[in-house]
Length: 285
Image 1 (cartoon, rainbow, N blue to C red):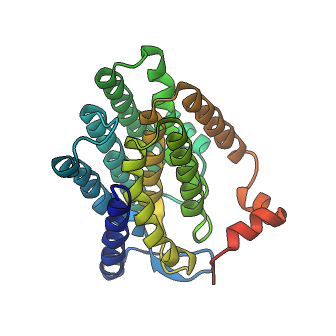
Image 2: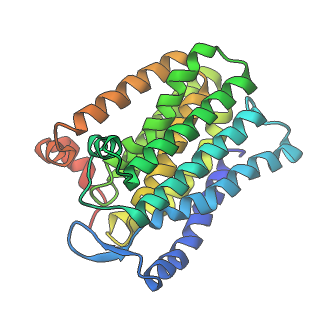
């Protein structure tokens, strides 16, 4: 029940907020063409940083009725809240300031090296800074090993961009995120039973489930706002789960995907694989 309730809250909060936010974005002219050249609300992923932090705080309120949730450290919790909200803000800045002529992580770093600040460069600088605060905060409040700070910071910093790499077709980024979250939560449950990873992940699963149909039908665009916020959640929960081996393997995977994205097109790779193409197109109009 303690997992079902926040999951339902996440679903309802996003479901109710989504149409109102979509109308507001359209009214303000914050629209963008999707890959089919159809104008749709851009950055509708803003619904997540607007609703989910409040639902995370509900977890603390539930302690009054059910007692403390297993494994939730309040200091680490607020570090997590800082990280995810910060990445949502950086994603929104990226959506509003983005120059589509500059694409790819390497190009943003090159521009930064040459003295030109791009929206991607802004996100890289402050995303690393936010991740550093998060990693140090988790270390100080949980009493973990100091040598885990660096990989934790890198996982938190890279995760938003990894989710963003898949945000090129309707529903793709949300599907990848959901798959990664389910894997993380199942792994965490098998090792530790009910714990903070599951409690914090539950409202997110509900919220993304409410959002996904609009994205799949091409009526919504996650944007950097949503992709970065969800990536912050994924990276933050991997760190908070506290498994050094899993954190290290996640870091290796993130670095591999980031380097691979500079060499190949994920879209072309998916389209050439029958099984991946089937999963990618599932649910679309």
